[in-house]
Image (cartoon, rainbow, N blue to C red; front, side):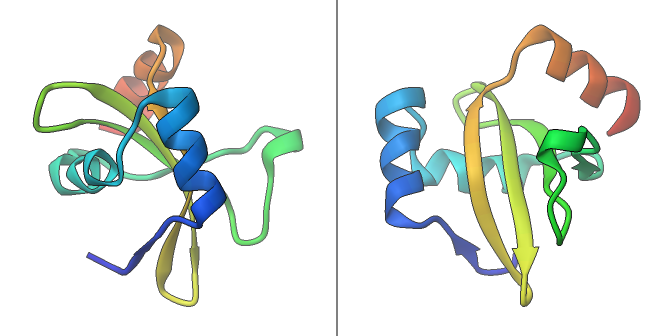
Length: 95
């Protein structure tokens, strides 16, 4: 896997707001089945594109992982429990 970078303020947000740990994010990358999807919503478009996927942690927690790839490294933007709509989109387009 590429180098996973989570800046301190994002890591704090993951912990405090979403109760997600760095290790859970790593597990989602390790357990991913499918492709990365680009966030094409106009207000979320970035350069490089924001990518996302839905995957389970080792404890079966289903998370949405949102990230950018910059200079070959994965920069986490967010990670949180996936909602039904996100799961349905990923099941249809990502697997």
